[in-house]
Image (cartoon, rainbow, N blue to C red; front, top):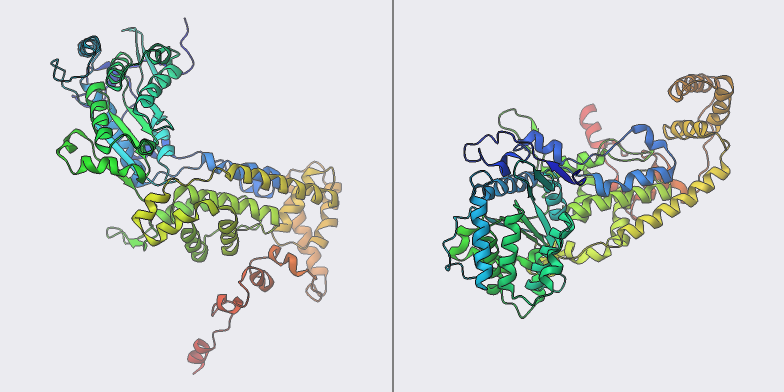
Length: 554
């Protein structure tokens, strides 16, 4: 009988450590990753071709939107989390071994606890558990769930050991129930196992009115039967909604979760869940855990210098934004990210990863829909004011560095972003249809693309149109790169025949100044705040540096 699609047949490899050797549950896991492998596995796969910048707007809109799902740049905090999860999974299996029968002993102990009808850990002599717990706390949008999901995706969801006729779950991820109930949390565990293995645990155990203690023992039995490597519980802050449950009772539950189930547990939540774990940090129970990770947003601190090489060392913020900046599908894009745009980007997003990417995506969509075709400080501020209003309180709290306010607003999210992206796509489609109706190349996609590409390169549109028509008439079988080379030669020759190419200036209405080249003063005027154009000019660029000139001639 063939295995289900999400099952893999166990392949045993040397795990590299004597402590792990001889344990099929560990030897069947993927190799422990070094830094190079981690970057390759976690980095998002984004396809980018510079020629796609000259595609139609509605095509580019789909490529830009894909950044929300596909872009992921591993940072130091992601590496730290992956290492901890890797250790927890493997160390948790040390006390559970298919080869030496220790896992069967654990099953027997779980069975005896259930038959006793109580969860008294002192009733039986239990095997020495190697399971640990870890809490991951960070504000909404810091990438907790995305990162943990990418890390878990490096493991197969189900491994079948044909030699032992045994099914292994390297991980199980679940969310806290919306009602904040510990009993519902236990039932969510069975529901998730059923979803992965197509079993019927939830129906079997939900019918009976078991206490939380009994459900914990049943969870332990299932976790042992299925050799769960790590249990990840997300949205842990929802447990604070249940006021009838004290912090101490919640902590006792999580301690019992690790001790009774015998499986490593990762608890993920926002700062609202932090009070639950502060009790643990202040008590002797710390020895039962594997520590806590508190994820702060990225910082835009000063760029340092590597003392060994003397080379400039980028901060994570600079490296992250430089990487993301490459993925622009705009015809007038700036290849280098300016300090002004980078500083504005940080000020508006406060380094919250989700906001950083959403701001970038929405800015590109707006740039296409308005004809701006580049990202500017003014555009970023407009997007922030109009599209990101729901998260203004949280970002303001981060700017003030106020812990109480950060806790208060740490759960704010942007559920309407998808709707806004669809609205912008529809606007781009309407404008694309209008452009095509006015285009001189209706029915010739190749000609329209060539015309758009060369126009974005600064070629005069009035001179370009007849040349495009002629090159397609004279050379209908040439490829697009070949056509562009021929056309550029003709264009250069045509410019030399024009006696006064700049004697007349094309009149452009002020409403369209934002579509002009970046170095055009009319464009700069369109991007400046009212009455503040002069303050944005710099000596040596837009302004003649008279003091420096006088020093040189003097």
